[in-house]
Amino acid sequence: MIGILGAGAWGTALAQVIAQNGEPVLLWAFEPEVVATMNETRRNPVYLPDRPLSDAIRATGDLAALGGCDLVLVVPPAQHLRGLLAQVPGTAPRILCAKGIEAGTGMLMSEVAAEAAPGAAVAVLSGPTFAHEVADGLPTAVTLACEDAALGGMLAGRIARPGFRPYLSDDVIGAEIGGAVKNVLAIACGVVEGAGLGQNARAALIGRGFAEMTRFGLARGARSETLAGLSGLGDLVLTCSSVSSRNFSLGRGLGLGQSAAALLSDRRTVAEGASTAPVLEQAAAKVCVDMPIVSAVCALLAGRLGVQEVVDRLLARPLKSETV
Image 1 (cartoon, one colour):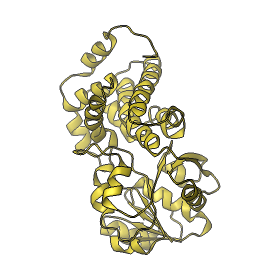
Image 2: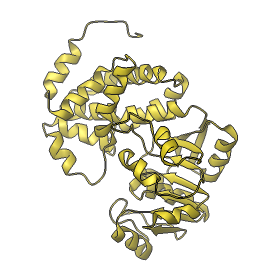
Image 3: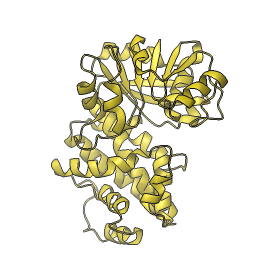
Image 4: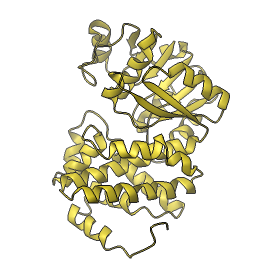
């Protein structure tokens, strides 16, 4: 049986796609009412209400029950991953599906998992995925990164389905950095949309944002081909282009003049980029990597600068070579 830790939209969508061939799935949810409703009505009333769930999915509120699974997909918000994962017994492999950097420690999710679930092998699932499309069975390709090639191949076979295609990599750090950084850049692209700065500006921001992602990734030991793949550039393009992205929609609200505090307090779902941005800015400074777009997002989220001030400062930066 495959367990899924986290019944938000993404966790529920993963449960749905994995259960396509009748594979039993145990889906853990925090809210007792969500557990009861999913088991009674076959729908997730809060996070994916319009998609009927497979009969092969059973919901639970008992973290210990996941200890009976031979594979666990870990899908909580990044800042809650450590505490929840530590409560799941056993040493079954964990596939980490959360995208972010832990506040306070600056650790990637695989580093957090190594401390919270010692003895359990870890892989990372990342790539361009909107939950509602995955739940509907629309074609999706992702990166599955695992340092152990044999284990990665086995895990890929367990989760691959028609329309859901994992590509293997052994670059765990690269897959994680792509997923974390793109969330922050998606906020910036949302600001461009909300402020009416145009498609030229959005394309430029994606290109320069990818340069920032690459600089930081290489400094942390990632490979450039990973960052140019599904978990980096692929995910960046998706989340920087649609209001279906929670991070993009947060940025759009900022671009329209709304405050970050108001936008974040009104959200039941999590825009991971808001938590990741300040941690990423600090991590970049430690490895002497310049990430001006990330710093601009931090200034907007903290209320230190307004949108026009941020734009003016970015455009006034000294001219430089594109490849530096």
